[in-house]
Image (cartoon, rainbow over all chains, first blue to last red; front, side, top):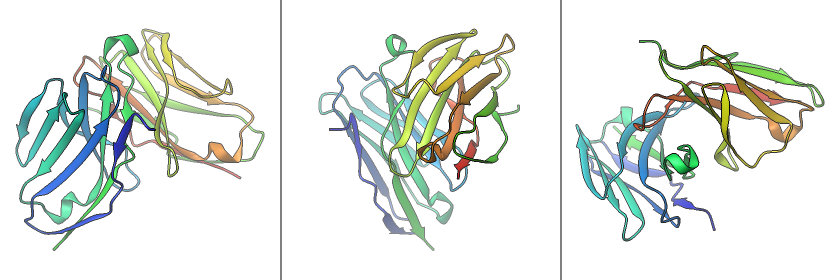
Length: 113
Length: 111
């Protein structure tokens, strides 16, 4: 079993829809949680970062962490065609693992105009 | 400010050869990590350097090695290349706990 599970999609939604992306994990030592967006032929771009349970909002993006369920989510409001990309969740134990990131496999998102 | 710079962007090598990839982190960032990305395995951690010292290493064979210089620039080397080493190699730098910034990667093709 992988430490981090993520549905690969693809997920296809109409423009303006609310998108929900999710990851589950098995390692209770994970303390830091991130979401990255990756466009084709580009490196991952950090979207959201959090280290506590609860919600964190940044513009159209909301990251949610539920440590008791080992479940994290990313919500995208008013989705745009430019949001079409692969979304990767990533997690880290923190200093004891020198912040090594464990990634999910990524979810491909397509926002249709 | 400039982001993480990786050179070269593309490389084609023959089996058995060796290759060196370069990474210049964001100015002031002392931590540099390397990741391998393939369609089958996704993003996998290779190693991390901080102030010229390797602090962590992933589950890759000894053919994969790296180093960091006093100016925080980093190189990774892969010796005796195999077809399975074809991948996007990503470098990321960090200044504190607020996540890593990745470069655009070096796409290595082994033929």
